[in-house]
Image (tube, rainbow, N blue to C red; front, side, top):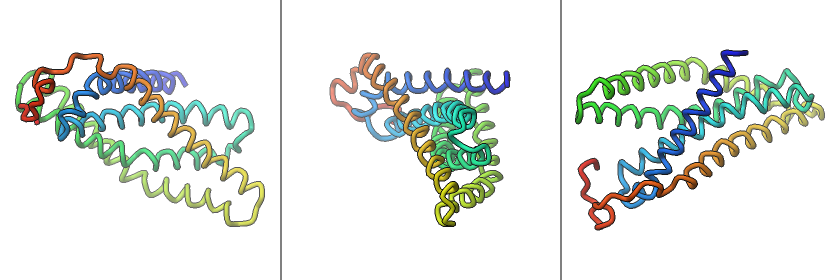
Length: 204
């Protein structure tokens, strides 16, 4: 339990920092467009995924503890949320990993190689885990959602609650990221190149 709480706190901190950093460049990324804009969106996705993970753990625990959701449906809820976030997480992670190696190629430093190496390891691990877990998670969801069609009223009710909770959790993660981005949007000065309307920036 202590380890899980630690992981959740770490996810909250990282997700907040991602959203804050994205917010600080959000206005400029709109003006620049291209790769910079894509990176901003990838950072926002990573932030939303992190918040969604934390909310999923908390909401699942509360839902089962209060009897709102049967313990037997906990795996279905977890698998459904996993399927909803894993593809965006992997896709955005690949883009961010590519950028970390670009940064190292431009400025060879211990910090940049460390970041690039860690991103590569994390991305490889997440991708491998996704390959191993996607199929079983999909099977779990298909079996769980089958209650909508078997004519069992209790099963129908539990299944609808799973879908509702998954939607709420995902929306909460996205909204949290959105609020933080808007809070910090334009908190950094826009570069002179953007103010002058120059779109031929060095990092594009």
